Image (cartoon, rainbow, N blue to C red):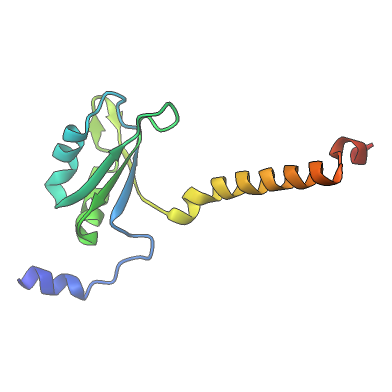
Length: 125
């Protein structure tokens, strides 16, 4: 109980949240092994391990408590798993969607160019 009261008065940096983004994982790692590694630091709500060619070697780990996520991030960054050193970061939604937004803007720009018959190669000459 004293520990829970102590936690309420701690001010965390703004980038700290309950969702961790993990990179440099072995491709063969399973969700159960992830639970074994990250479960030592607190209750886990969800783990998503990447399974497409673009997302292999990455995972998202969602903790129930923000302090457990901070503790796991602090202790597991640089942790060796099967000869690979983990990179554990806090998930930042604004960075995750920047690439997608740029792709949407480029698609919209291309659509407008074709609609009005604008060819950028002609403008460069």
